Length: 263
Length: 331
Ligand SMILES: Nc1ncnc2c1ncn2[C@@H]1O[C@H](COP(=O)(O)OP(=O)(O)OP(=O)(O)O)[C@@H](O)[C@H]1O
Ligand SMILES: [Mg+2]
Image (cartoon, rainbow over all chains, first blue to last red; front, side, top):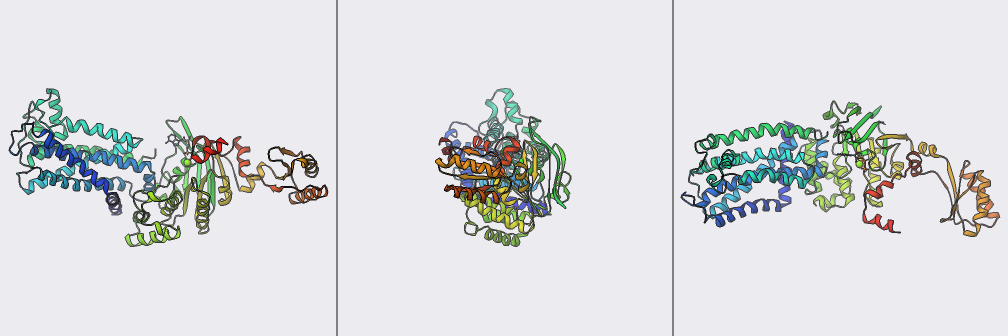
């Protein structure tokens, strides 16, 4: 019970940080909104989607997934910062549950995602995004996105605890997330990629997430070489399995690493 | 009873390449203050981190408040307070936010956490800046807040790692009086410092460490005795130097030495104040008026020098190059 309370105190701290430095919240939302606008108007005209409603329908799930994928970097650099300032030492010298700090942080970062996704959804709506699947499916889609972000923030905890320097943490996070988001179906169909990359792209968790969201938002997915493969037939299930795998690996790994940060 | 016991602690970093602690042993009697005195890199922080459950030693044993640090770190955390070398508080949050948060993490309950935060802010003269983010605090305010955070639940054993490093003389004085008050309240304190006068001022006992080992320990007086007795020091005008040296030598029974630059004559004396009075009388008879005169007990600097062969702070100047020091070097 007290472990739960400790966690809530840490989560509250994460939220309070946002109110004390509103810039963080502003820039965490401006960036994805900027992506929405850029992709919508720069590539929107040149990509023939064959879908009703145009490119923006395909784009939005891609940008949502990309944005939650960057939770990894946010969690990692926030934690690295606390480590550097010695704040983690103070937390670790307190008689509190040792996992409260990391769990609280992942929860706090997920709450930030709720705000960011909401703002993006509104921005998307303004530029023409109209999911056609009904409120419930859209809501499930957003919950799915939040879960994905939550799973990745555990990877972020691990990265944040592993690297020695905040700038290294930034770089490592980007090295993990950039290829995953671009070697995917997020912004353009994978059909134009070399065959080997297509396989990677279809199995890439970012792609399965994007495909799952498109399905939930009432769109049809297009597949190239891998049409008929397991992930393309079951994007929702595949994504869910990916999340479970990520959490099953990184929660124990990160908690353990945190507890032993001493040695 | 001993509140802190460290036995044979060994800690290496980088797979043994750096030996931070090399069979370090020390203990602190309940309700007393031990100052761990050592230069940069001596192993002070490593020692404190091990005792405060943040670091596991490679070998050795440590007990805090009667509890084994390695076997039951979670129980040790209930009886200790720690203020690390660098103030470890959330820069973005306000002082009040920080203390309330830590209070809640000590399971005080929101109301009590708030009451305790207000009380501590008042006590550390931070009430006025309570609602400002820490990043706007001065170094001294930060340190005080950090100390306040380690006192939320009255700890039995308190660890302070270089509590006054980086503070100006006034900040240091303030910190000292806060610490003295805590000690009166009965806390057992282990304090590290590079400042010899700080150890002298605050500690019941001093453990001098260098290269991860305790190289001497005892009261400040005992350590000073170890280095030698008192010295008589007299500064006179240039034309009186040779006559004064004769007088000093005859009264002390030892060879007098001269610091040419300062025109200071000094010699070890065994009779203390008597030697001083005799010397002044003789000088007066000769019509010599000293510019300055005193009986100097060896400082802990002398202790350090004689124990380690190098001055305590000599490394500091190499490693940190704050602007203030650079000026000094130019002179
Ligand atoms: N994480 C680390 N990795 C490698 N070496 C380390 C690490 N921490 C400390 N050391 C080394 O261990 C030795 C003891 O360091 P420690 O920080 O305990 O000294 P200190 O007495 O606290 O010094 P200071 O007065 O500068 O704070 C030093 O040589 C230091 O370089
Ligand atoms: Mg240190």
